Image (cartoon, rainbow, N blue to C red; front, side, top):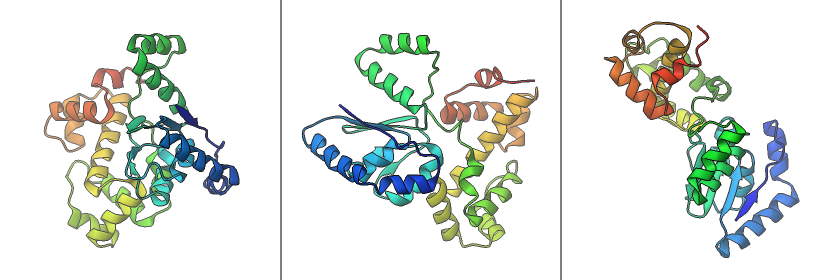
Length: 251
């Protein structure tokens, strides 16, 4: 098993400069050699870019740090990226998400040998299970660079309780349905409808944490017919229940 290190990346410019270095090119050659010998290759955070540079992730499922996902998707279009997951295994490759994703990756590897030992280690380190990055992603950081996506986001937030219409969305942002869909996919890796659902979840979580409004009332405010539907969606999207979300409330 081999691990691909990151490059202390803090900005997009430093990321692109780092990937152009000779040692990254040399690393790519080494990764291909190890892969040919059957080694498992792992990478987390910006290190996923180093692994992707080798071409070994092409047609493989992978994740990366959520805020660099648009750059990753543009640079490596053949990689099947899912930045919502914290850890993704595909073939002999395992990738993990942002910063402390290194911890999740290490626990994932330990769990493959002994689930009991992984649980024991996590308790010593005070690390909770975090299968998804979705709850941590700051969407505003991703959308600001694309005016079409930005306008769609502003439009969508005013319609959470009313429902989604791709025709209305395209008209509101002044773009064709095809262009709107393509821009959302390029920047966020989601369809307009999927992102609309994400905004509903985000709003519901905010209300759960900052108010004592009932789940039924919150469901109505974000466009769901009942609290049961909202509970199911939260569990599916965040792997968290209402009680778990409200436990972190400051109210």
